[in-house]
Amino acid sequence: MSHKDIVNALIDSQGTLFSEEMGANIARDTPQELFHWLEGAILLSARIATAQAIEAAQALRAEKLHKIDEILAIDKWDMVAVLRHNGYKRYDTVTTEYIKDAAQMVRDRYDDDLRGMKSDDPDEVIARIKEVKGIGDVGADIFAREVQLVWDVFYPRADGPALDAAKDLGLPTDPQELAALAGSRERFVRLMAALTRAALDGPSEQVWDAA
Image (tube, rainbow, N blue to C red):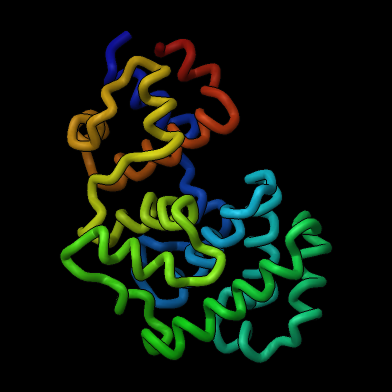
């Protein structure tokens, strides 16, 4: 099978964006959707199963706790309870503090709009993302991996476990080559999600067949 066949199988079978699974539509490039994905990156950064982080992000959105106003208004322990009752027990208190701090920081520094972080220098934008409490190197990479769908400064970006999976599947590890194989910006971002899922959970049967 060709590289193109493997890429198509990855996108078709494992290409759901993590932000999408959480309920965030970052393709809209709006402050609220981008903040929910930042919240998601904080949740995914903890040493906790991806499925639990996604469940927690879905629950926060269901309670409108992907909105900065709601996050700042809710009592800390009420937010802890939402996380605790939705698969996020081990880090519920500290993550609540991180999310509340992130909401306050984005309000104070960027007037509720993460797009204020953007510049022409990807390293500078990564540094700004890492100023958010709860976001380190891993969290910044998680956020950038999918926000490149709408932020030109990061596209095409491939790193971390996605590149490990690409190498294991015999695909190129150069972002430009992977983007060319994907065929479009959206498909490239979905490829990055698919490769990350392959690294975390193993390639799907469809991917193995193509490989």
